[in-house]
Every structure is written in C-alpha cells, then in structure tokens.
Length: 180
Ligand SMILES: CC(C)(COP(=O)(O)OP(=O)(O)OC[C@H]1O[C@@H](n2cnc3c(N)ncnc32)[C@H](O)[C@@H]1OP(=O)(O)O)[C@@H](O)C(=O)NCCC(=O)NCCS
Image (cartoon, rainbow, N blue to C red; front, side, top):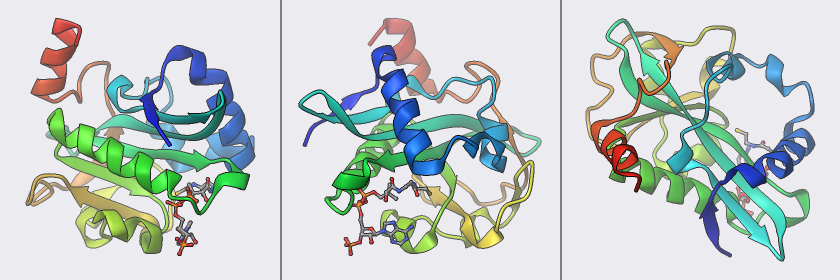
C-alpha cells in the first residue's frame, strides 16, 4: 500500500468515494461551513490507489481559531472503499498526514468524528472544549490534537475558515514559495 499526494486528477474519484462513504447530502454538515470556498491544504491531501483504483483519501482544511486567528487544521474527510476497510488504510493515511503536518509546522488539528477511533492518534475531547464550531455538532465528537505540546492552551472562541494562505505555518509558506 502506497500513499501519494493528491493531485488534481484525483478529484473526481475522491468525490465519488466521498459520496459512497458519506452520501451526497454531506455538504449540510457543520464542518462543511469551514470548507466552503476554501481549498484543502495541498501538501496534506493523501490518496491510496491500487491498480489505478482509488481505495482511500484524506484531506485537511486550513482553519483559524478564536479572535487571534491561530492557524490550525481540520482533519477530514477520510474515507476508504467499503471492500478495503479494516486493512489499516485510514490509519496509514492519518499517520502520514499528521506527520507531514507536524513537519511543515502545523501545531493544532481538530476534527468531528468518533473518539473511540481517533483516540489512537492522540485526539482528545477536552482539548477542543474551549472552541465553538459555526453550527451544531455532537460535543462528544468534537476533538483536538496538539502536534506541539500545549499548543491549544488558552485558545478559546470560534473556529473560522481560513482566508487564502492565512493558516499556513511559516515552514509551509516557505516551501510553497520555493516550489518544493
Ligand atoms: C472510518 C473509515 C475511514 C476507516 O477506514 P479503515 O481503513 O477501515 O480504518 P482502519 O483500517 O485504519 O481501522 C479499522 C479499525 O477501526 C475501527 N473503526 C472504524 N471506524 C470506527 C469508528 N467510527 N469508531 C470506532 N472504531 C472504528 C474498525 O472497527 C477497525 O477495528 P479493528 O482494527 O479492531 O478491526 C472507513 O470505515 C470509512 O470510510 N467509513 C465511512 C466514512 C467515515 O465514517 N469516515 C470517518 C468520518 S469521521
């Protein structure tokens, strides 16, 4: 199993996989308020293909937190083809994505998902407790992860979608400027 960085040609297959995994009405969920009109973080889009067929996808969106607009990431959506679930594909995509995120300087990741699954990566409910999303979610499913210990300490308030380029940490912005 090999993870590659998503490229524009993957887009249609990813949409089809997400329709299958979440249904075509998924855009109504609160997390989509944070994705509307914003591109996912290009460096962090991961895909798994086997014999050309898309088997798994993970994207991260740039967000900013509170009035100080602290840069962070929203993890998801993550989806794996139904016939390939339980093989560790999502786990591999998530570890891979979190590793790159930390390397390019992100400090905080949030998501809305099942704590029993995401706890293995270190996501915790209490880390997101001071934050609000722009719509209803089950509070038990709103989770945070600190890629740098203490990164969420004292961060409170509303989670906003990022303006273009706003939530890029310094290392990622530099890499983009250099075309790496
Ligand atoms: C959730 C999903 C991405 C997991 O993909 P996957 O490649 O099968 O995941 P992994 O192989 O890394 O992990 C599978 C393990 O996690 C468990 N697991 C999967 N989803 C879980 C959940 N929501 N809560 C708790 N455990 C879960 C499985 O039971 C399995 O356990 P096992 O290893 O003891 O058998 C996949 O099931 C999927 O695409 N589901 C539909 C879309 C979805 O719900 N995405 C996540 C939204 S937050």
